[in-house]
Image 1 (cartoon, helix red, strand yellow):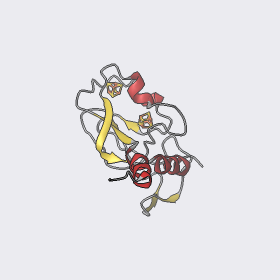
Image 2 (cartoon, rainbow, N blue to C red):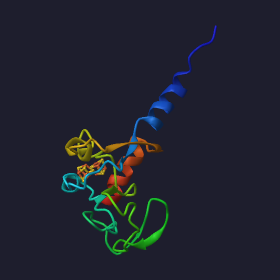
Image 3 (cartoon, rainbow, N blue to C red):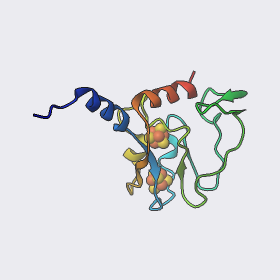
Length: 133
Ligand code: SF4
Ligand code: SF4
């Protein structure tokens, strides 16, 4: 008789428990989510984002991907038309709140899980610690 492998089950849960949050085209640009983000990961369409915004990062930093850049360097907007979330700053609110605050306040429910971008809780906590020393 085939037996379950508990080790494989634990690994599966840890890897796929969290998905990044994205803002869909349904966004009505109300701006309600932006001040709720503990990482300043939400930007208006067309606005450049920076690691330094709303974090303790300054000067030359080494990102979690190993890239050396200035924390004040302006990064390409993810969307030109509607509010967007920088994956590099979103921790899905891990370390701050029990649930994503942007999704909690959005009046049209357009802050949703991104099935193509998944991070474990450990990775999200590491990102939170990177952004806020
Ligand atoms: Fe910010 Fe939390 Fe929304 Fe991520 S899930 S963008 S950290 S409010
Ligand atoms: Fe767009 Fe929702 Fe944020 Fe308003 S709260 S700007 S509709 S994502």
